[in-house]
Length: 269
Ligand code: URA
Picture (cartoon, rainbow, N blue to C red):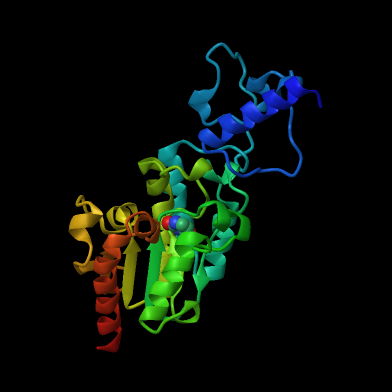
């Protein structure tokens, strides 16, 4: 590689890093510039309305490969989630669900870790890079902190169940859009119902707002108990800071510690 090509490659990599691209999605690179197939024909249509208006006879689109319109996707998510009778069935239904575009860029589904049948369930926002690679929630830096916080109250992953609102990594770890959260919500709600814990701990603002339907930010809502209706029964839910936030703001660990003591107390009751 000559010096100029190498510099261009480095500049491109720097640009990717700045844009949040920090992991490959395929083993081998794809030269998009070499592909002169017309994109309209190659790309799956998003919905009937996404086809070019000039097209006289739209090609039929395989239902299984076309991402649905958001309302359709949310409706299909509700129906699918309702039809799952076990966590394994739910996982398989999610694996085949095409309604959330995040699936296209993620490496794999990140469904859960820990043990179903335990009394406390933690719900985060969405997997990050490490979770996307390993296929398990909270295995990166924030997961390590979560493990230490659990240990501080005498728990480990065999004594809790862990999942996320969104089971696919958003590209560059961006915040999931409200639409993506709304589409995935029926699945996590069903997951909670099937795990049937006594307590749900929402890690961070997005998880608390999505699951509990509250407007307050996490600074206000953390440490307060909320009622959560699983569809089967009413349980208690506690918003607390996300471990990733605690890594950036270690002084707030003091408040998170209070929340974890409250979880321990509730489990001891
Ligand atoms: N952050 C989350 O919200 N979930 C994970 O699984 C990892 C990081």
